Length: 195
Length: 185
Image (tube, rainbow over all chains, first blue to last red; front, side):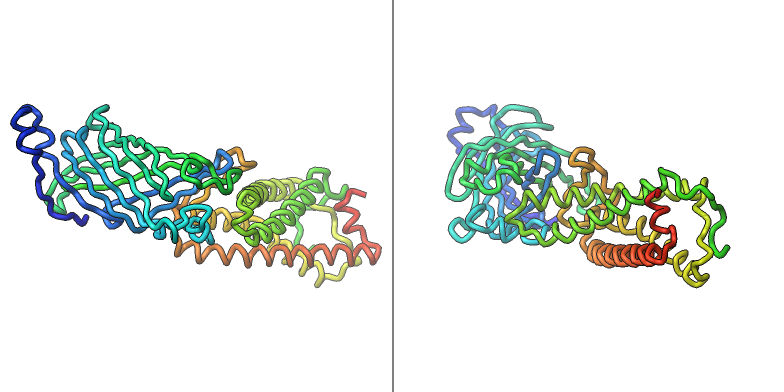
């Protein structure tokens, strides 16, 4: 897996000075990754029984995380909406059109969030703002540490995280095809990090 | 007798006749819906989704019904052949029936494999209710091989069934009991 060498970020000295016991944040590492190491998908439901999964093939994510203490995580994601992909004939054109992502007018969508402090290492929550089509709404995701193990090929420990949360597309002005495409869309991201 | 091992002087049983017409109806409906569903634009997404699921449902009902027919045929046989039909036509009919049965099984199986390997990964549900697991994972290269074979086999099935129907009408017009036997009259 590709991985950008990380520089450790320390908290502002003053904060550390007054709260020396807050060690976790000091161990946070900044990871920057894109579609080559992570996967960003969205899942729509149809008629309550079917689903279709699309993905974004061009995004960048900046993650500030201590894999041992993910309750201090910060995340920023920027997605190029034109890079939407759904392996069904004609679906990409539909999703790029003004009825959906309106990629000419809104070429980017973003999520900016932080761990809420709730949960455990295996399952914790992120809350922040999701911006699609220029409309910003609060968005919440449930993140999980899926596995953490030694990768013999890399000679390093690898942690695999996933995060998923539901959004309502109508809140972002995407109201077309309500009969055929669910209003609730699940956003899911998955990434492997070198610890 | 050129091809039939068992025969019944009573004609086709009621179950054999019903299964014949049900399968014929399913094949024609699935074929027609298949043509419509691929032509529907994504702007009519709801109709398109429903058409695909109805097509899959009708198609997947065919193989079990065909196997049931084959089982009835093996157990009960078929009516004695009309001696006024020339032997070459018997042989042609027997070969046509073998290919028809093979296609009746193969076309739905190929359709199921197309749905399984399609990169869009749309689920298959019988009657929009019962999920049917896909045994193969999405695989675009495999899909691009299977999907055209499904289409060509489906056209072959419908053309062969049309020939089968034309032959039945031909014999009927000659006063033979071929069509009436299948209608139970």
